[in-house]
Length: 150
Image 1 (cartoon, rainbow, N blue to C red):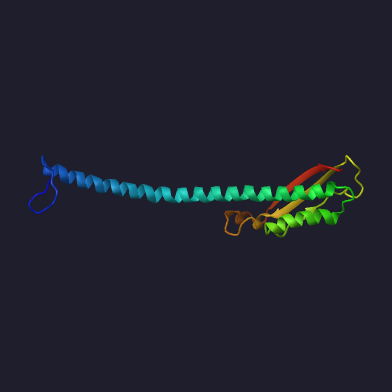
Image 2 (tube, helix red, strand yellow; image 1 turned 45 degrees about the vertical axis):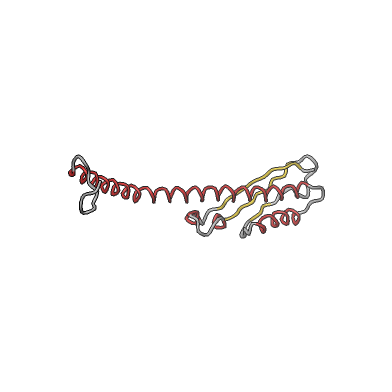
């Protein structure tokens, strides 16, 4: 219902209508304060999840590259260049540079059934240039793979 000036009023008690309006503005202030506190927390948590999933994907890419390298090493007549080439193809496709490969030490002398071990190291700075992982720039992500010589 409206009074003569066109402003809404409460039928029973005009004081009650003023109380309702002031209570609404207090609720709005509380909601703004909660948003000001929670929004940065949610933002940090969201970017943290993005960084962690990016790290998991990065490490999985390294595992796949190391697996391709050890598969090349397990072939009959494989040489170190075969292993390096297989790893290089995978990491070049993902635009990862600065990696260090330790091919199996017994690659040329291994007989059928012998175990071959390959190690791949990549600086964590290759992970992402906008990520918080840059705080760990002096660290490496290391992946090690073992296979049986064919």
